[in-house]
Image 1 (cartoon, rainbow, N blue to C red):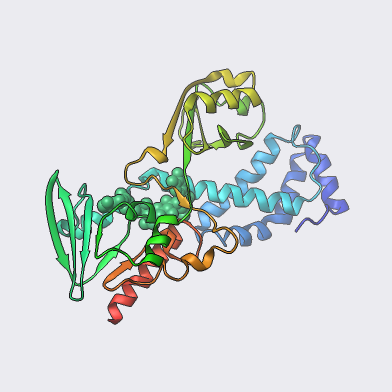
Image 2 (cartoon, rainbow, N blue to C red):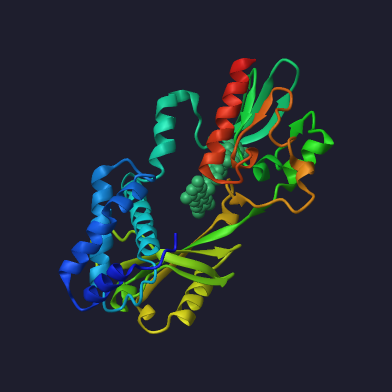
Length: 326
Ligand SMILES: Cc1cc2nc3c(=O)[nH]c(=O)nc-3n(C[C@H](O)[C@H](O)[C@H](O)COP(=O)(O)OP(=O)(O)OC[C@H]3O[C@@H](n4cnc5c(N)ncnc54)[C@H](O)[C@@H]3O)c2cc1C
């Protein structure tokens, strides 16, 4: 993909730096179809793609004095359009909020779903499965032909199960490797990185703050929001100190730092499965995704994809199909 600029393109880029708007139009025409086709891999939304292409070129124009030498315009524009489209899709998602998805499912399921009712124990036999849980703090139980267990392996390992898991399954459930990250959020009085003419996307590589990126940029306010990640159970103070160490000066505008520590979440303390160590996979696979009697397992950890919503959804489809065929 990293093809160097042709002589013609290099000339247009040079003219853009000299404030020649016509050269910008020529460069845009040169790349329009390539960018459109590439962006269409991420979304079928024609209007959004066209807006994003325009924004890529407007952004180049606005930063023409500071952007430096673009050795490979093709690589530069393809990367820029991808970032722009993914960011726009992300903003669109935030307008309705990710929580809308489970809330909509829950509403469709009506009284069949019991929110705020943690399972406390599982009993299983040849003819069915019984689940004990707390409903508004009061012990309750329910029975079914099958159980689809959708909590993380970390949570499942904490539950009493009767009869107990066989040794290989107990090992697999208890030892799935997970990482625990902390989401870091900085609120600032200004979008100071814009005033400095630099990207808010930064890698720090420290446990207190691994990376940070611009968030909620579509919100019409002078204030700025940065999101970031810290390893393990991070603190707002340490994350902010690291940020200011690498970005002194205008970052003084940060007025609030906040962290969400997943490790402290009572129901979702395991963030995401990590890789199995070399030679370990056979201890987990395939036992982790196979049903045990009338109990089936779904979740991001119970799929061949290594992580994420797609793995979780795929595992759910697999189990729905398996039960349907029984
Ligand atoms: C900060 C963050 C950002 C992420 N970003 C992305 C992303 O951009 N894209 C992506 O694909 N993935 C992302 N992920 C990963 C994604 O969220 C997970 O892979 C996915 O949610 C896992 O789905 P799951 O159904 O396996 O588990 P979960 O979503 O964790 O669902 C398990 C459910 O079990 C419930 N539970 C636990 N214990 C009990 C109990 N005793 N009784 C009853 N219920 C219980 C929990 O409350 C929870 O609702 C992100 C994760 C985090 C933490």
